[in-house]
Length: 169
Image (cartoon, rainbow, N blue to C red; front, side):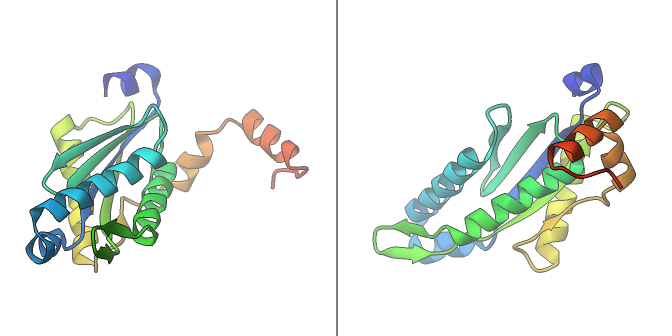
């Protein structure tokens, strides 16, 4: 949060919970549950950038800290993670199954006034919203497209459009 304020670059937080994890433990045992946690952790580490910080938050919950990441790209990361976990079979011993996750995303900017615990609580609230709306989905605050567009300078936009042989509209 100090870095975000100092550099004026946003930091996003993704909270992840493995859907129906208790059923995995109850059906296959706690060792298989531990292997499921390792499986998800490996997929997270494969997906994230080196500067991102994956954490086990507790139980079957993970927290991902994404420095220098606005809300829209963080939501894209969350969706990429959700789809990767859903399409990557969990294989252990005689078991082959599919895991699903629910995700909540929040973004902290240099003008945010919330504390770290309030940021976590907000991301967690979006996670619970995902759980209550059917699981295996990502919930987040509304994305302000004007703020997202403003995050890239007009010169950067022109250069990007030029690189693809297009003019900005």
